[in-house]
Length: 424
Ligand code: GDP
Ligand code: IMO
Ligand code: MG
Image 1 (spheres, rainbow, N blue to C red):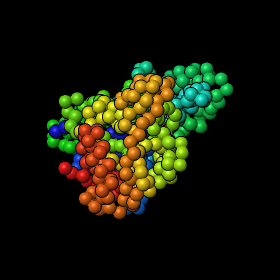
Image 2: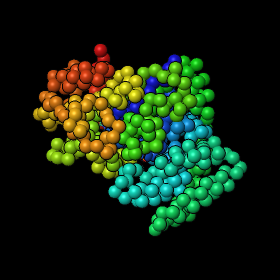
Image 3: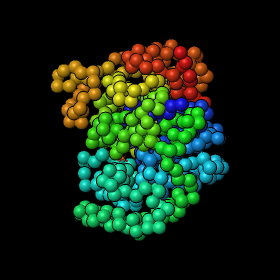
Image 4: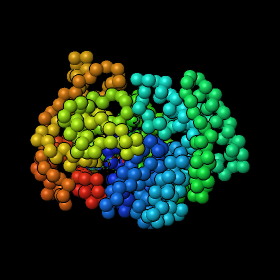
């Protein structure tokens, strides 16, 4: 058996939560491998909308186990709130959610450091979700961090205070930055006691056994490829490896055990936070997409920047992830355009290029578009891809030809049921 991977190919919010939920019945285990509560994964079914931040998107399907891997960072406060929201649904979380002992903890001071660092950056800020993600991963690689397994140790509080002391020392360098740590610590320790009641595992051992027992596993990514710490639009990125390789380090799965890599993208493109976005539309078309697609952040509520699909960017993401199949999301959102556009290449320093350049954050690049017939109709009630308007079918064929990967799923609305299979 192999581990399939599902991840975002753009700047996040592609609809990963929805598709993980749709695919979950085919799997025994869903495992998150990186990121933390900066993620907001939305699932809609039976008239209810759920937003998950740390808990994998397989949690609503009975009999499926959900694993939070070592590559994830957990804020006990956000986590407790997430659990409380799920309580009315009787999901038997205690037996169905397993957490890696090696996952790192977000401390209240990590959140403060994130905030202080962003404020100090002024107009150069990353646009972080302010959830403490960057400082927590910095402590992980700096070998200072606290992990879930540490909460069972008798000297946990001592370790906590030692790290907080370091953070307080750093915070002193941010002149004028004020905070009240005492208010934040109570809820944090309450969250720790909630975490203690759940099952902590060694995810690498657990998943190895599961694979040997023939279990089917889907790894769920967070953020998107262009927010990857190595391959994204650095420095406007998150602090983890969001790409397929992150599955290996974030769960303890060997590279030889990776199966299908399912890449998710929107029929257009969005980004929330700062940083380069070559196909961004700051006009009526962009406003139209934002309105129709309800493009506001699931975690922060910020308006998402909107633009046309970017083929060189997608090709790059497909390459670094080794994508084997694609899901095209939010096709219905373009329903009132008679013409849509796809960026086929860029002009940089007067030269035509068809790759994603290193210095995209510093150099002006102008996207060059191909105009494509829009479907200009409501897709949300379609029951099968065969019934889809020819213009949508042509768009799918066009993208498959240019991206050289099959599009197996076309999504036409936020609900679980608004998902069309395009099986070859
Ligand atoms: P994720 O972070 O990748 O899981 O995506 P988010 O949940 O942050 O953002 C995706 C948003 O689009 C959510 O509000 C989803 O409910 C919604 N969504 C997902 N697929 C579709 C679709 O095909 N059409 C429409 N209109 N909305 C969708
Ligand atoms: P999901 O999993 C979209 C963005 C932030 C910011 C940058 C760094 O829902 O797709 P961070 O808080 O990680 O330090 O922020 O990354 N960002 C996301 N954008 N979707 C997400 O997650 C994101 N998680 C982080 O807006 O620009
Ligand atoms: Mg999201």
